[in-house]
Image 1 (cartoon, rainbow, N blue to C red):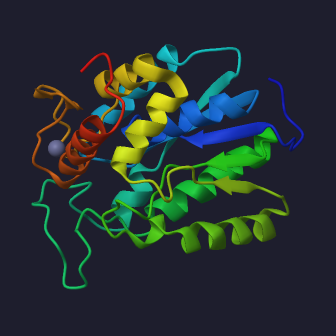
Image 2: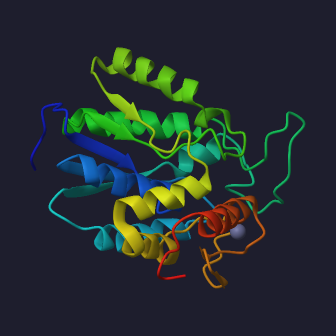
Amino acid sequence: MTQFNQTEDTALVLFSGGQDSSTCLAWALARYPHVETVGFHYGQRHAVEMECREPIRQALACDRLGIDHVVDLTVTIAALGQTAMTADIAIEMDQGGLPNTFVPGRNLLFLTCAAAIAYRRGLRRIVTGVCETDYSGYPDCRDDTVKAMQLALNLGMQRRFVLETPLMWRDKAATWALAFDLGGDKLVGVIRERTHTCYLGNRTDRHTWGFGCGTCPACQLRARGWERWTEAGPVCGAV
Ligand code: ZN
């Protein structure tokens, strides 16, 4: 297997099979000649998103798309305690204003694992779809958190990783717009039909913006973004 030498043009995308990470994968493929992906099992209720990954990779397949890595963190995350993301309990806000879908340490762990893979593979850029604009208040999605992680990972692994967050300042409407800019109707269609966002793992109820329960926070964000984009932006031919 080819190993790369920390060149500028290699990237590892944290790819869950959701709208954001799929858009990030298309973004990375538009920029870098070699792009690999990594996904994580962590006991998520919406494990169906992991099944969406390969069809999306196939839809975006090109010479630039390299191998996929899958890491099983199920035992690790489960051992750290239950949340509404990993157990069948109602989604609600906690006293600190955070939704109980927050999995403490999850994104920090993801970035650490991704960096370990990037280290081994010789990949320079690590791309993640975290976003501070339209997020659920998760502190590990913040720009400062990612910048701090970049510093910590580079110090701790003696590398010069570049953590890239193309969606950090984009809301969900802008994320749909980015997909359209990157790949037109075709990419919007792939993201609408094949990506998964719903926290409850619903792949049966179909909406204009894709599949999902339509009521969980993730579905609502995705739906509102779609509505704002289709009302204000270029109309996708598939609408
Ligand atoms: Zn939902």
